[in-house]
Image (tube, rainbow, N blue to C red; front, top):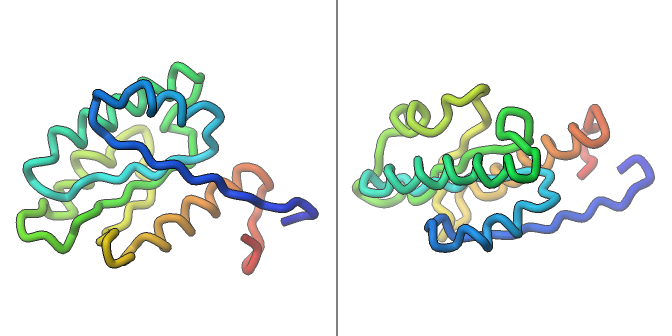
Length: 136
C-alpha cells in the first residue's frame, strides 16, 4: 500500500482476568483491537468485565477505545442460549462511540473475515488516510 508492504500480526488472548498480564503485553504497540464477546446469556457479566479491563489496560499505554480502531464480534451465535444482538449492543457497544459489530460463529468461520477485514481497513485508514479499493 502506497509503496509499503503491509503486514498484520494477529494475537489472541483469553478474556479471563487471570490472564491480565498476558493481555497487557499483547496490547503494547497495538494498532487495532477486535473484542470478541461470547453471545451466551451466562457470559454477559464476564464480557462486561473483560471490556472494562481492556480499557484499563489500554490506558496504561496511553490508548483509548474512544479513538483506537476497534470492532466487536458477537461470537457463538449458533448456540441456543444467546442474548439478542440489540441487548449485546446496548451492553457492550454504547461507549464514547459506536463501533462496527459483527455476528459470528468462529468454528465455521462465519463473520470472521468480515470482522478482520473491517478492522484492517480501519487501521490502514488511520495510518495512511483514504484506503483505495483492492488495497489490503
